[in-house]
Image 1 (tube, rainbow, N blue to C red):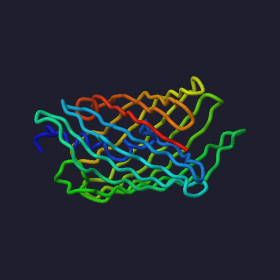
Image 2: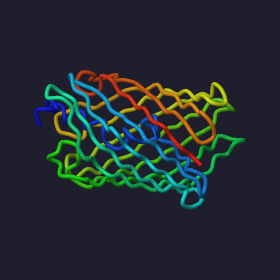
Image 3: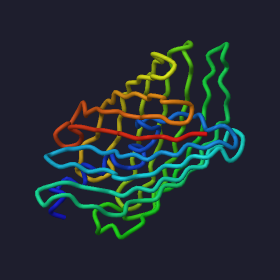
Length: 247
């Protein structure tokens, strides 16, 4: 489609579900909401390459602690793309998932908490709209987290996408966060994703981000970054901006 400036394949490298996991980062964590509690996010996320930009605006994510150590996940996005013909919008993919933490952290030792977090993406429209996938896709990741001390936390993991509409591919990331105050948490991550479209190079990049707690129930999430390798073809600028309600 002309309005996407011929970069659909390159942009699709990042804008699979890993780009929307672990807000405001691509690397996720293994920690579900407490049993009976929820997280509700309204956000926009996207990136630009080769003079165009694409992403989700608006988008909603809902996570619920439906069972002990278990998170039920739903995400509904509206896709957008900018180019010479202006800005276009369209239905993307609904995302459903279940995060199950099966290893608890040993706070006195080195054992991290670990979770499985399978995700299914279901197209909400025909792929011809430029935003929805050509197939139902499945992501099978494993995520781990360890508190290094009272201020530093590290998250790491990744997984494999089964993507019948194009090609299967992998994603991995590492995230380091530091608590600067009771309200402010800063983070930096490095991630890598193999190509999901024939002829497109792999993507390696980084993000810097922060979470600010206005109070116990309202939170601001923001991150920005760019690619490290194959920048002009894959990721010249990446952003996430969201507002989260929790109980």
